[in-house]
Image (cartoon, rainbow, N blue to C red):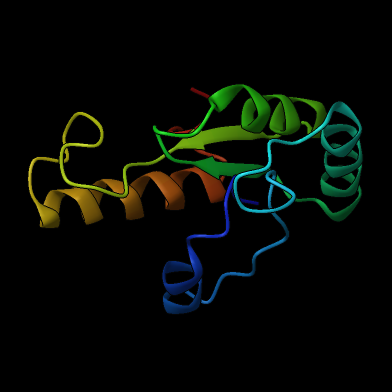
Length: 111
């Protein structure tokens, strides 16, 4: 699950599947009902990670993840977006390792 539908290339490249988005439509914040419905659907489907970028409100992503029994994962999609992402190579290293760790149930999630 992602906050906004902007990981299409990453998802395709690594053979992942997008379960849904926290943001119901681009630029529209989720309602409490939407958050509840997403969390229930995630829990039922076994989806455990909600990915979001630093420039989106983390509260909704973390709330959905928490209610579903999963974790929110803040990832940098720009150079210097988060610590350790000083150039394009380190940005992708951090992105891939954070995502892999979160999907495997290891550290890197729940900011």
